[in-house]
Amino acid sequence: MILDRINLCIPKGARVAICGPNGAGKSTLFNVMLNIPGVDFKKKTHKLSGKINNTLFDIKNYSNVKVHLQNSKIGYSTLLEVGELLRLCFQDELPKEMLEKLGLKGKLKQRISSLSGGVFQKLNILLVVATNPKVIFLDEMTTGLDYEARKQILDYLRDYITRSSATLIFITHYLEEIYDLAEEIYFMDKGKIKEYGKLAELFVKYNITTIDRKIWG
Image (cartoon, rainbow, N blue to C red; front, side, top):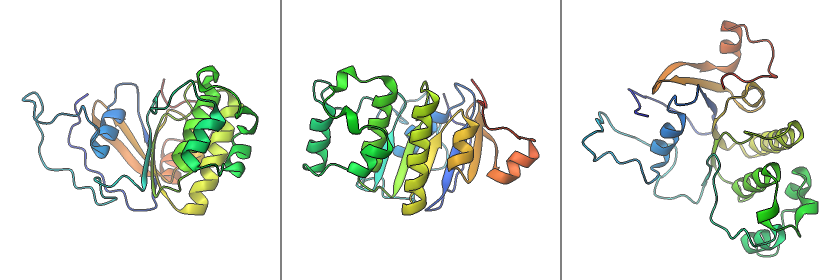
């Protein structure tokens, strides 16, 4: 997907949802914002005007930035047990409160390779948030999960964002996630931002009265 005249200004502490149909350019926008390898602007097929001016965080310093991409495999061995992975990450001081909130306390002896999709997703979210990042990028964080797993992840993220005032930028198809986590919405289609604004204003404008459904997909 080629992005077309995207111009965003996201201040620190913002909570932004990026929405749109499949193929709208949402993940491409993430890749550009994060300067992820694979976005090659040197190819002649790309026509890039303007520039990417990232003042939200130093793109060369990822210590305060955490990313969860859709269906991401974050590089650890699936032969490890959940508890072994967490001890490697947290030097034997397990984030017990987080484990409890995400329903992972009873999964410490389970191998990562045997985790269900919902449990694996919750583990990823824990690893994203547990280091107290200042900026969080999430790409379709609850796709394919059941209601209980989605609720645990949303409750956990909402609590963290409220306490930390971290900047949250996330891609979603679900109004429930927007309602729970976002203050602003950007609607994308065919590589363009078609609509944007404050959550309450757009809900009124489009007469959105129920959150228990998808926007697209």
